[in-house]
Amino acid sequence: MTSDLFSSRVTRFTSRKPVEGRYAIYHEGHGGRAVEIGAETIDWLLERGWEVYAMDMPMSGVNASDMGPSFPNHHSDMYKLDDGITSPVATFMLPVKNVVDFIERRSVPNPTILMMGRSGGGWTTYTYSALDPRIDVAVSVAGGRPMSQRLDAPWGAMEIGDYEQSAPEIFAAIRHEDLMIAAGARGSMHFFNVKDPCCFRVSPGDPLVTYLVSGGIRADRTIRVFVDTENTGHSIGAAGYPELRAFLDEVLRRRSLSPGGGGLQTPCTRSTVVPAIVSSWGLIEEIAGPGVERVHRGEMSPWWPERSVAAEADSDALFLTCVPYPYPSYNSAMFFPREH
Image: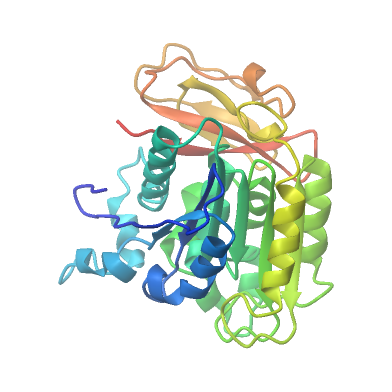
């Protein structure tokens, strides 16, 4: 999978005892190769019948060879790719979309797709899974936390993360914690460590834990949070795997809320939506783009996505995914470029 600047190299693993229709995407962060750092998790999934696709972030792990002598050589360079139309964050999303497309083409009808990631891969997991209703279950391991908590961390702005975790065109419209709630058509699980040596430390009883669990109730999806008080790694610890197994047993028994995915994540008229500026209350302030014939202003409907206002546009432009906002009467929006 390649673009003009970046390639995404994917490793596919098959289980000795496969369960038909089960596919997992394991996405690593900045630490190195997914097939090495994520080996324990990949083996755990294989033992339970999942076919696993291991991925790395742009310019990380097996994709490190894409780094140039000057540009691009770090995720902080991504802002230079912003052309005012497509967010550079798409560079992190499109490789996952290509894998999901590949799974759909070769799988049984209606496959079950699990996406799981660690660190930056955890961020990729909850962000992409909020966009694509084909991801049934999302599992983020030490993937992020609210921007307000990051700024209040002992090391301050260092926890804000690389460009993709703070891109203003994305996170001025929607918060990390709301993407976590929206992730996974059936539900999601989020792992944190009290003694994390890196970042995103969360303690039992943290307001984030309450917010995510209550958000699952509001959005009618299964959301579980496990805070490990003993694990000293930036990872899922030994105590986490039994929790993961219990969560998967629970969530896989639950049917999706709609044929196209989960409840509020149903895509909103994909062929007729173009970039918009969306306020924090979910009001569409402006819609503009190539092929637009009409410009609308108004409030999106969280319960009837097909009634959400949109402008007429080229069907190959962009699609919109409804994401639940903290209040059930409103929702916000994310935009994601379709593959041409």
